[in-house]
Image (cartoon, rainbow, N blue to C red; front, top):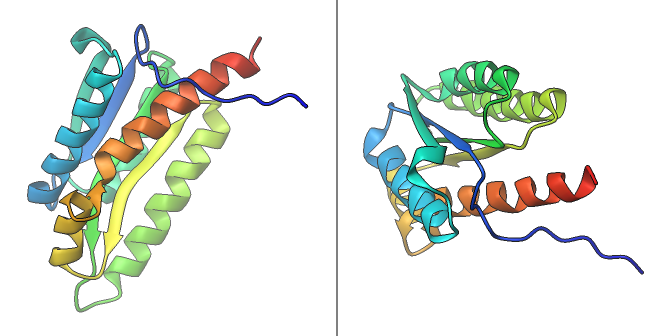
Amino acid sequence: MKVIEGQLNAAGKRFALVVSRFNEFISKRLLEGALDCLKRHGAAEEDLAVIWVPGSFELPYLASLLAKRKKYDSIICLGAIIRGETPHFDYIASQVSRSINQISLLSDLPVIFGVITVETIEQAIERAGTKRGNRGWSAALSAIEMVSLVSKMQK
């Protein structure tokens, strides 16, 4: 039996992090977690780019532009969508997740969904570095592993 697994080594790989400014107090913590993960796994500062967008709805557009340029080995989308009193949450969360997935599939590039979708601010805080870990770190770790797997599959 042949088993193929990705390695957790970001050295020499380029990553773009597209981050939503809306709910910045959460997305900033997700970004810090992602950058920490990438650097601890060997990514060089000059191989990382952080692009801020107004909100989570704009994440897919910028990710799509970056994917077309083929400059990065992976794109990590980070943000927080917190449910409010209107159905706006459902529309945004659904479209953003679907669009990011579609960009990844159409571009043959790992585009990672690091957007937390939560009911409350407390849940967002938990997922941005407290009790439930940091989802930015998790997204970066997924990006590193996927870049490695893509490389292995192309051989």
